Image 1 (cartoon, rainbow, N blue to C red):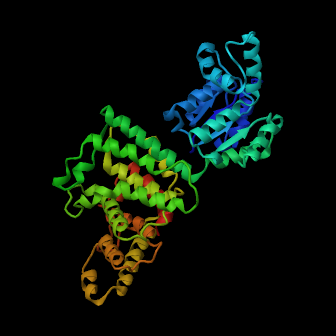
Image 2 (cartoon, helix red, strand yellow; image 1 turned 135 degrees about the vertical axis):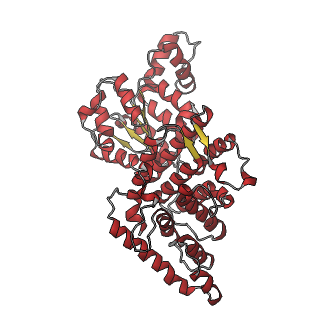
Image 3 (tube, helix red, strand yellow; image 1 turned 120 degrees about the vertical axis):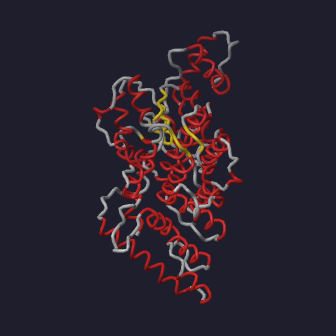
Length: 451
Protein backbone atom coordinates (compact mmCIF):
# COMPACT_ATOMS: atom_id res chain seq x y z
CA UNK A 1 0.00 0.00 0.00
CA UNK A 2 1.07 3.60 -0.55
CA UNK A 3 1.33 6.14 2.26
CA UNK A 4 -0.31 9.55 2.58
CA UNK A 5 -0.14 12.89 4.33
CA UNK A 6 -3.69 14.15 4.75
CA UNK A 7 -4.21 17.71 5.95
CA UNK A 8 -7.84 18.30 6.92
CA UNK A 9 -9.25 20.38 9.80
CA UNK A 10 -12.75 18.79 9.97
CA UNK A 11 -14.22 22.23 10.57
CA UNK A 12 -17.67 20.78 11.23
CA UNK A 13 -16.40 17.84 13.26
CA UNK A 14 -17.24 15.38 10.47
CA UNK A 15 -14.37 13.00 11.17
CA UNK A 16 -16.01 9.75 10.11
CA UNK A 17 -17.84 11.25 7.13
CA UNK A 18 -14.81 12.98 5.60
CA UNK A 19 -12.45 10.05 6.25
CA UNK A 20 -14.84 7.69 4.50
CA UNK A 21 -15.37 10.04 1.53
CA UNK A 22 -11.63 10.38 0.96
CA UNK A 23 -10.25 6.95 1.90
CA UNK A 24 -13.20 4.56 2.07
CA UNK A 25 -12.71 3.13 -1.41
CA UNK A 26 -8.91 2.97 -1.13
CA UNK A 27 -9.04 1.05 2.15
CA UNK A 28 -12.09 -1.03 1.22
CA UNK A 29 -13.92 0.13 4.36
CA UNK A 30 -17.42 1.30 5.22
CA UNK A 31 -18.16 4.58 6.97
CA UNK A 32 -18.68 2.80 10.28
CA UNK A 33 -15.14 1.40 10.13
CA UNK A 34 -13.75 4.91 10.71
CA UNK A 35 -13.62 6.59 14.12
CA UNK A 36 -15.61 9.77 14.72
CA UNK A 37 -13.12 11.66 16.87
CA UNK A 38 -9.71 13.12 16.11
CA UNK A 39 -7.49 11.12 18.47
CA UNK A 40 -8.79 7.67 17.56
CA UNK A 41 -9.06 8.51 13.85
CA UNK A 42 -5.43 9.69 13.76
CA UNK A 43 -4.22 6.49 15.35
CA UNK A 44 -6.38 4.32 13.09
CA UNK A 45 -5.26 6.08 9.90
CA UNK A 46 -1.60 5.93 10.91
CA UNK A 47 -1.94 2.15 11.18
CA UNK A 48 -2.89 2.33 7.48
CA UNK A 49 0.11 4.61 6.73
CA UNK A 50 -2.05 7.73 6.45
CA UNK A 51 -0.62 10.59 8.52
CA UNK A 52 -3.29 13.10 9.51
CA UNK A 53 -2.57 16.78 10.27
CA UNK A 54 -5.54 18.87 11.41
CA UNK A 55 -4.24 22.43 11.05
CA UNK A 56 -1.76 24.44 9.01
CA UNK A 57 0.91 24.56 11.74
CA UNK A 58 0.81 20.78 12.10
CA UNK A 59 1.08 20.40 8.33
CA UNK A 60 4.08 22.77 8.21
CA UNK A 61 5.80 20.90 11.02
CA UNK A 62 5.27 17.54 9.30
CA UNK A 63 6.62 18.81 5.98
CA UNK A 64 9.61 20.54 7.61
CA UNK A 65 10.82 17.22 9.01
CA UNK A 66 12.59 15.42 6.18
CA UNK A 67 12.21 12.05 7.92
CA UNK A 68 8.43 12.56 7.98
CA UNK A 69 8.21 13.55 4.35
CA UNK A 70 10.29 10.51 3.41
CA UNK A 71 7.46 8.34 4.74
CA UNK A 72 4.92 9.82 2.32
CA UNK A 73 4.07 8.88 -1.28
CA UNK A 74 0.99 11.09 -1.82
CA UNK A 75 -0.57 14.16 -0.23
CA UNK A 76 -4.24 15.14 0.09
CA UNK A 77 -4.78 18.78 1.10
CA UNK A 78 -7.76 20.78 2.24
CA UNK A 79 -7.55 24.46 1.26
CA UNK A 80 -9.39 26.38 3.98
CA UNK A 81 -7.64 25.26 7.17
CA UNK A 82 -7.51 26.09 10.85
CA UNK A 83 -4.13 27.70 11.40
CA UNK A 84 -3.20 26.43 14.85
CA UNK A 85 -3.94 23.71 17.35
CA UNK A 86 -4.03 23.83 21.13
CA UNK A 87 -0.35 24.75 21.64
CA UNK A 88 -0.71 28.39 20.58
CA UNK A 89 2.79 29.61 21.46
CA UNK A 90 4.42 26.74 19.55
CA UNK A 91 2.14 27.09 16.53
CA UNK A 92 2.40 30.87 16.30
CA UNK A 93 6.14 30.51 15.69
CA UNK A 94 5.29 28.56 12.53
CA UNK A 95 2.42 30.76 11.36
CA UNK A 96 3.67 34.30 12.02
CA UNK A 97 6.41 34.25 9.34
CA UNK A 98 3.71 33.61 6.72
CA UNK A 99 1.52 36.38 8.12
CA UNK A 100 4.40 38.86 8.09
CA UNK A 101 5.65 37.98 4.62
CA UNK A 102 2.38 37.71 2.72
CA UNK A 103 -0.48 39.24 4.71
CA UNK A 104 0.88 42.59 5.95
CA UNK A 105 1.01 41.63 9.60
CA UNK A 106 3.58 43.34 11.81
CA UNK A 107 4.21 43.20 15.52
CA UNK A 108 4.74 46.97 15.39
CA UNK A 109 1.26 47.75 14.04
CA UNK A 110 -0.66 50.28 16.12
CA UNK A 111 -3.43 47.75 16.59
CA UNK A 112 -1.36 44.57 16.50
CA UNK A 113 -4.18 42.25 17.59
CA UNK A 114 -6.51 43.50 14.88
CA UNK A 115 -3.73 43.20 12.28
CA UNK A 116 -3.01 39.66 13.45
CA UNK A 117 -6.67 38.57 13.27
CA UNK A 118 -7.19 40.09 9.85
CA UNK A 119 -4.05 38.40 8.48
CA UNK A 120 -5.11 35.07 9.99
CA UNK A 121 -8.49 35.30 8.28
CA UNK A 122 -6.81 35.85 4.91
CA UNK A 123 -4.29 33.06 5.40
CA UNK A 124 -6.90 30.58 6.60
CA UNK A 125 -8.82 30.73 3.32
CA UNK A 126 -5.74 29.73 1.27
CA UNK A 127 -3.69 27.79 3.83
CA UNK A 128 -3.58 24.59 1.76
CA UNK A 129 -1.96 26.41 -1.13
CA UNK A 130 0.95 27.44 1.10
CA UNK A 131 1.54 23.79 1.92
CA UNK A 132 1.31 22.94 -1.77
CA UNK A 133 3.92 25.56 -2.74
CA UNK A 134 6.23 24.42 0.06
CA UNK A 135 5.93 20.80 -1.06
CA UNK A 136 6.26 21.31 -4.80
CA UNK A 137 8.65 24.29 -5.02
CA UNK A 138 10.78 24.03 -1.89
CA UNK A 139 10.76 20.26 -1.29
CA UNK A 140 10.46 19.17 -4.95
CA UNK A 141 7.62 16.85 -4.07
CA UNK A 142 5.99 15.52 -7.29
CA UNK A 143 3.15 17.87 -8.26
CA UNK A 144 1.00 15.10 -9.68
CA UNK A 145 1.12 13.27 -6.34
CA UNK A 146 -0.73 16.08 -4.56
CA UNK A 147 -4.53 16.23 -4.62
CA UNK A 148 -6.65 19.09 -3.30
CA UNK A 149 -9.84 17.99 -1.61
CA UNK A 150 -11.91 20.91 -0.40
CA UNK A 151 -15.36 22.39 -0.42
CA UNK A 152 -13.86 25.88 -0.65
CA UNK A 153 -12.14 25.75 -4.03
CA UNK A 154 -14.70 28.11 -5.44
CA UNK A 155 -13.29 31.14 -3.61
CA UNK A 156 -9.93 30.77 -5.17
CA UNK A 157 -10.42 32.05 -8.69
CA UNK A 158 -7.71 34.67 -8.21
CA UNK A 159 -5.15 32.09 -7.11
CA UNK A 160 -6.05 29.77 -9.96
CA UNK A 161 -5.57 32.69 -12.34
CA UNK A 162 -2.17 33.44 -10.81
CA UNK A 163 -1.02 29.93 -11.70
CA UNK A 164 -2.21 30.43 -15.26
CA UNK A 165 -0.51 33.83 -15.43
CA UNK A 166 2.77 32.26 -14.40
CA UNK A 167 2.29 29.61 -17.10
CA UNK A 168 2.06 26.91 -14.40
CA UNK A 169 -0.67 24.33 -14.63
CA UNK A 170 -2.98 24.89 -11.65
CA UNK A 171 -3.58 21.97 -9.31
CA UNK A 172 -6.82 20.04 -9.49
CA UNK A 173 -9.33 20.75 -6.75
CA UNK A 174 -11.98 18.10 -6.04
CA UNK A 175 -14.81 18.62 -3.59
CA UNK A 176 -15.70 15.99 -1.01
CA UNK A 177 -18.94 15.43 -2.91
CA UNK A 178 -17.13 14.78 -6.21
CA UNK A 179 -17.68 11.15 -7.29
CA UNK A 180 -14.12 11.14 -8.72
CA UNK A 181 -12.56 11.79 -5.31
CA UNK A 182 -12.74 8.25 -3.98
CA UNK A 183 -11.44 6.76 -7.22
CA UNK A 184 -8.59 9.29 -7.44
CA UNK A 185 -7.37 8.50 -3.93
CA UNK A 186 -7.84 4.76 -4.51
CA UNK A 187 -5.72 5.07 -7.67
CA UNK A 188 -2.96 6.70 -5.63
CA UNK A 189 -3.26 4.06 -2.92
CA UNK A 190 -2.92 1.12 -5.31
CA UNK A 191 -0.16 2.61 -7.51
CA UNK A 192 2.13 -0.40 -8.10
CA UNK A 193 5.43 1.47 -8.19
CA UNK A 194 4.62 3.55 -5.10
CA UNK A 195 3.43 0.46 -3.23
CA UNK A 196 6.60 -1.51 -4.01
CA UNK A 197 8.82 1.45 -3.17
CA UNK A 198 7.07 2.01 0.16
CA UNK A 199 7.38 -1.64 1.21
CA UNK A 200 11.08 -1.75 0.29
CA UNK A 201 11.74 1.46 2.25
CA UNK A 202 9.85 0.08 5.24
CA UNK A 203 11.85 -3.16 5.20
CA UNK A 204 15.16 -1.30 4.88
CA UNK A 205 14.27 1.04 7.75
CA UNK A 206 13.16 -1.89 9.94
CA UNK A 207 16.37 -3.79 9.25
CA UNK A 208 18.59 -0.78 9.94
CA UNK A 209 16.96 -0.38 13.34
CA UNK A 210 17.20 -4.11 14.03
CA UNK A 211 20.90 -4.16 13.17
CA UNK A 212 21.50 -1.21 15.46
CA UNK A 213 19.81 -2.87 18.44
CA UNK A 214 21.07 -6.40 17.89
CA UNK A 215 17.75 -7.80 16.64
CA UNK A 216 19.22 -8.72 13.24
CA UNK A 217 22.49 -10.06 11.86
CA UNK A 218 24.17 -9.06 8.60
CA UNK A 219 24.35 -12.62 7.28
CA UNK A 220 25.62 -12.04 3.73
CA UNK A 221 29.37 -12.33 4.58
CA UNK A 222 29.05 -15.98 5.60
CA UNK A 223 28.06 -16.90 2.05
CA UNK A 224 31.04 -15.14 0.47
CA UNK A 225 34.47 -16.52 -0.37
CA UNK A 226 36.89 -16.38 2.56
CA UNK A 227 38.73 -13.34 1.23
CA UNK A 228 35.51 -11.32 1.16
CA UNK A 229 34.16 -12.07 4.61
CA UNK A 230 35.37 -8.79 6.09
CA UNK A 231 32.06 -7.01 5.52
CA UNK A 232 30.77 -5.53 8.78
CA UNK A 233 27.34 -4.76 10.22
CA UNK A 234 27.93 -1.12 9.29
CA UNK A 235 28.32 -2.18 5.64
CA UNK A 236 24.93 -3.89 5.78
CA UNK A 237 23.33 -0.83 7.36
CA UNK A 238 24.93 1.43 4.74
CA UNK A 239 23.62 -0.72 1.88
CA UNK A 240 20.12 -0.62 3.37
CA UNK A 241 20.31 3.18 3.63
CA UNK A 242 21.34 3.51 -0.03
CA UNK A 243 18.77 1.19 -1.60
CA UNK A 244 15.75 3.51 -1.09
CA UNK A 245 17.67 6.28 -2.87
CA UNK A 246 17.64 4.14 -6.02
CA UNK A 247 13.83 4.28 -6.07
CA UNK A 248 12.90 7.93 -6.64
CA UNK A 249 9.45 9.10 -5.52
CA UNK A 250 8.56 10.32 -8.98
CA UNK A 251 8.99 8.80 -12.45
CA UNK A 252 9.31 11.30 -15.30
CA UNK A 253 8.20 8.82 -17.93
CA UNK A 254 7.26 5.20 -18.43
CA UNK A 255 10.73 4.45 -19.77
CA UNK A 256 12.36 5.43 -16.48
CA UNK A 257 11.03 2.47 -14.60
CA UNK A 258 12.96 -0.17 -16.54
CA UNK A 259 16.24 1.66 -15.91
CA UNK A 260 15.43 2.16 -12.23
CA UNK A 261 14.52 -1.48 -11.64
CA UNK A 262 17.61 -2.76 -13.44
CA UNK A 263 19.89 -0.48 -11.40
CA UNK A 264 18.17 -1.59 -8.21
CA UNK A 265 18.62 -5.32 -8.83
CA UNK A 266 22.23 -4.75 -9.85
CA UNK A 267 22.84 -3.00 -6.54
CA UNK A 268 21.41 -5.80 -4.41
CA UNK A 269 23.19 -8.57 -6.34
CA UNK A 270 26.59 -6.89 -6.72
CA UNK A 271 28.33 -9.07 -4.10
CA UNK A 272 27.08 -12.35 -5.52
CA UNK A 273 29.96 -12.79 -7.94
CA UNK A 274 31.93 -13.57 -4.76
CA UNK A 275 29.62 -16.41 -3.72
CA UNK A 276 30.93 -19.92 -4.34
CA UNK A 277 27.49 -21.42 -4.89
CA UNK A 278 28.81 -24.73 -6.25
CA UNK A 279 30.63 -25.75 -3.06
CA UNK A 280 28.68 -23.72 -0.52
CA UNK A 281 27.74 -25.69 2.62
CA UNK A 282 24.51 -23.68 2.87
CA UNK A 283 22.44 -26.09 0.81
CA UNK A 284 19.03 -24.68 1.73
CA UNK A 285 20.07 -21.28 0.44
CA UNK A 286 21.21 -22.58 -2.96
CA UNK A 287 17.96 -21.60 -4.72
CA UNK A 288 18.35 -17.99 -3.54
CA UNK A 289 22.09 -17.85 -4.25
CA UNK A 290 21.79 -19.26 -7.77
CA UNK A 291 19.12 -16.74 -8.75
CA UNK A 292 21.02 -13.76 -7.32
CA UNK A 293 24.34 -14.96 -8.76
CA UNK A 294 22.75 -15.31 -12.22
CA UNK A 295 21.19 -11.85 -12.07
CA UNK A 296 24.52 -10.32 -11.10
CA UNK A 297 26.26 -11.92 -14.08
CA UNK A 298 23.50 -11.17 -16.59
CA UNK A 299 23.22 -7.49 -15.70
CA UNK A 300 27.02 -7.08 -15.63
CA UNK A 301 27.72 -8.64 -19.02
CA UNK A 302 24.58 -8.14 -21.11
CA UNK A 303 23.14 -4.65 -21.52
CA UNK A 304 19.84 -6.10 -22.76
CA UNK A 305 19.30 -8.52 -19.90
CA UNK A 306 16.46 -7.74 -17.46
CA UNK A 307 15.42 -4.49 -19.10
CA UNK A 308 11.73 -5.26 -18.67
CA UNK A 309 11.35 -6.11 -14.97
CA UNK A 310 7.96 -5.69 -13.34
CA UNK A 311 7.16 -4.74 -9.76
CA UNK A 312 6.59 -8.43 -9.04
CA UNK A 313 10.03 -9.34 -10.41
CA UNK A 314 11.74 -6.74 -8.24
CA UNK A 315 9.75 -7.82 -5.19
CA UNK A 316 10.84 -11.43 -5.74
CA UNK A 317 14.52 -10.55 -6.18
CA UNK A 318 14.52 -8.18 -3.20
CA UNK A 319 12.81 -10.82 -1.05
CA UNK A 320 15.56 -13.35 -1.84
CA UNK A 321 18.20 -10.73 -1.08
CA UNK A 322 16.69 -10.03 2.35
CA UNK A 323 16.46 -13.76 3.13
CA UNK A 324 20.12 -14.26 2.23
CA UNK A 325 21.50 -10.98 3.50
CA UNK A 326 19.93 -10.68 6.94
CA UNK A 327 18.90 -12.99 9.75
CA UNK A 328 16.33 -11.54 12.15
CA UNK A 329 15.13 -12.59 15.57
CA UNK A 330 11.56 -13.81 15.88
CA UNK A 331 9.02 -12.58 13.34
CA UNK A 332 10.47 -9.11 12.91
CA UNK A 333 9.82 -8.84 9.17
CA UNK A 334 6.91 -11.23 8.73
CA UNK A 335 4.21 -8.58 8.24
CA UNK A 336 6.35 -6.56 5.83
CA UNK A 337 7.38 -9.67 3.89
CA UNK A 338 3.79 -10.64 3.34
CA UNK A 339 3.02 -7.15 2.05
CA UNK A 340 5.92 -7.66 -0.36
CA UNK A 341 4.45 -10.98 -1.47
CA UNK A 342 1.27 -9.17 -2.50
CA UNK A 343 3.29 -7.56 -5.32
CA UNK A 344 4.22 -10.99 -6.70
CA UNK A 345 0.93 -12.36 -7.91
CA UNK A 346 -2.16 -14.34 -7.09
CA UNK A 347 -1.93 -16.99 -4.40
CA UNK A 348 -2.80 -20.41 -5.86
CA UNK A 349 -2.67 -23.99 -4.67
CA UNK A 350 -0.21 -26.09 -6.66
CA UNK A 351 -0.98 -29.46 -8.16
CA UNK A 352 2.21 -31.51 -7.75
CA UNK A 353 1.72 -33.54 -10.91
CA UNK A 354 1.17 -30.39 -12.92
CA UNK A 355 4.27 -28.83 -11.32
CA UNK A 356 6.34 -31.92 -12.20
CA UNK A 357 5.21 -31.68 -15.82
CA UNK A 358 6.07 -27.98 -16.00
CA UNK A 359 9.53 -28.59 -14.53
CA UNK A 360 10.22 -31.34 -17.08
CA UNK A 361 8.92 -29.27 -20.00
CA UNK A 362 11.05 -26.26 -18.98
CA UNK A 363 14.17 -28.48 -18.88
CA UNK A 364 13.33 -29.90 -22.31
CA UNK A 365 12.83 -26.35 -23.62
CA UNK A 366 16.31 -25.34 -22.51
CA UNK A 367 17.78 -28.53 -23.97
CA UNK A 368 16.15 -27.72 -27.31
CA UNK A 369 17.54 -24.19 -27.23
CA UNK A 370 21.01 -25.70 -26.98
CA UNK A 371 20.72 -26.53 -30.70
CA UNK A 372 21.36 -22.86 -31.45
CA UNK A 373 24.78 -22.94 -29.75
CA UNK A 374 27.94 -23.09 -31.85
CA UNK A 375 28.96 -26.68 -32.61
CA UNK A 376 32.11 -26.49 -30.49
CA UNK A 377 29.97 -25.76 -27.38
CA UNK A 378 27.28 -28.37 -27.89
CA UNK A 379 29.21 -31.17 -26.19
CA UNK A 380 29.86 -29.06 -23.06
CA UNK A 381 26.23 -28.02 -23.00
CA UNK A 382 24.93 -31.58 -23.29
CA UNK A 383 27.23 -32.71 -20.48
CA UNK A 384 26.08 -29.90 -18.18
CA UNK A 385 23.34 -31.41 -16.03
CA UNK A 386 22.23 -28.39 -14.07
CA UNK A 387 19.41 -26.20 -15.41
CA UNK A 388 20.89 -22.84 -14.31
CA UNK A 389 24.30 -23.64 -15.84
CA UNK A 390 22.63 -24.48 -19.13
CA UNK A 391 20.65 -21.22 -19.04
CA UNK A 392 23.83 -19.27 -18.36
CA UNK A 393 25.56 -20.89 -21.33
CA UNK A 394 22.65 -19.85 -23.54
CA UNK A 395 22.77 -16.29 -22.27
CA UNK A 396 26.56 -16.03 -22.64
CA UNK A 397 26.12 -16.96 -26.28
CA UNK A 398 23.15 -14.67 -26.96
CA UNK A 399 20.70 -17.52 -27.43
CA UNK A 400 17.89 -15.79 -25.50
CA UNK A 401 16.10 -12.91 -27.14
CA UNK A 402 15.48 -9.64 -25.31
CA UNK A 403 12.69 -10.01 -22.78
CA UNK A 404 13.09 -13.74 -22.16
CA UNK A 405 15.61 -13.42 -19.33
CA UNK A 406 13.12 -12.52 -16.61
CA UNK A 407 11.13 -15.74 -17.07
CA UNK A 408 14.28 -17.77 -16.44
CA UNK A 409 14.83 -16.05 -13.08
CA UNK A 410 11.79 -17.93 -11.84
CA UNK A 411 12.59 -21.19 -13.58
CA UNK A 412 16.11 -21.29 -12.12
CA UNK A 413 14.50 -20.89 -8.71
CA UNK A 414 12.06 -23.76 -9.28
CA UNK A 415 14.77 -26.09 -10.58
CA UNK A 416 16.69 -25.52 -7.34
CA UNK A 417 13.81 -26.19 -4.97
CA UNK A 418 12.11 -29.07 -6.80
CA UNK A 419 13.98 -32.22 -7.74
CA UNK A 420 12.62 -34.96 -9.97
CA UNK A 421 13.85 -38.44 -9.00
CA UNK A 422 14.83 -41.26 -11.37
CA UNK A 423 11.21 -42.41 -11.51
CA UNK A 424 9.90 -39.02 -12.58
CA UNK A 425 8.45 -38.13 -9.17
CA UNK A 426 9.06 -35.00 -7.12
CA UNK A 427 11.73 -36.06 -4.66
CA UNK A 428 10.78 -36.11 -1.00
CA UNK A 429 14.06 -34.33 -0.33
CA UNK A 430 12.93 -31.22 -2.18
CA UNK A 431 13.40 -28.13 -0.08
CA UNK A 432 10.06 -27.03 -1.49
CA UNK A 433 8.36 -29.78 0.49
CA UNK A 434 9.87 -28.70 3.81
CA UNK A 435 7.50 -26.97 6.17
CA UNK A 436 8.92 -23.55 5.44
CA UNK A 437 6.25 -20.85 5.77
CA UNK A 438 8.23 -18.32 3.74
CA UNK A 439 8.81 -20.70 0.83
CA UNK A 440 5.27 -22.00 0.83
CA UNK A 441 3.83 -18.49 0.54
CA UNK A 442 6.44 -17.38 -1.97
CA UNK A 443 6.10 -20.33 -4.32
CA UNK A 444 2.33 -20.19 -4.46
CA UNK A 445 2.48 -16.56 -5.53
CA UNK A 446 5.22 -17.19 -8.10
CA UNK A 447 3.62 -20.20 -9.72
CA UNK A 448 1.41 -18.57 -12.36
CA UNK A 449 4.19 -16.19 -13.40
CA UNK A 450 6.88 -18.84 -13.67
CA UNK A 451 5.95 -21.14 -16.55
